[in-house]
Image 1 (cartoon, helix red, strand yellow):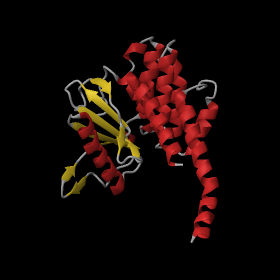
Image 2: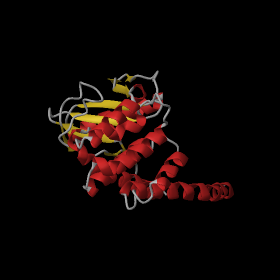
Image 3: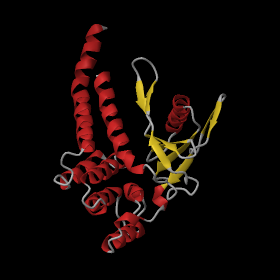
Length: 259
């Protein structure tokens, strides 16, 4: 069971890394003005803790100022989440030999702002995207599409759009659906770029919406998303979880009989 789980997250990591190539040459200064260095490369996020246990940080990027940017997404940040992110921060620094800035993307105001232990003090940059205005961002994107100014659209902002707040009351799931439907226009005739945009939208938003909401969106956009690697990855993860639920009673029974 452990091997299958690792393979699924390896597949997700691979899809993310390939799609994150869209970030190269861009900056994330729209998230925070201090993130103004250009993105030069996508770094490995696979962290081997022992010979059998592996974990995956969300995103790791090398910047033009020869530092790293570690990005995590969490709807509501707990103390255990912060401890885990601190561990990733240390491991990524060790793996890649550069200093890292950790940014945590969230959609709720966090009471947990860092982690302190006898050996370290970890204070990441926390960005609550619910404080952004999705309706104004959509208006800007649609205006540029109508004017034929595709190249001036910040595609990275489109990727994070589903996590923005909406004064008109649109949920994250509704904004994800809207963003997916915009990808063919934003990418114009570039099918590969369109697929990468969709993959990032689906994978980065999955942490913040329920599986039921996500599946409804995937079904509604079935033809548009046909063959997308992110969809297959999530389907594999869902099948793996169902297998665990089915087999759990058998494991419990076997454990009882062995006592």
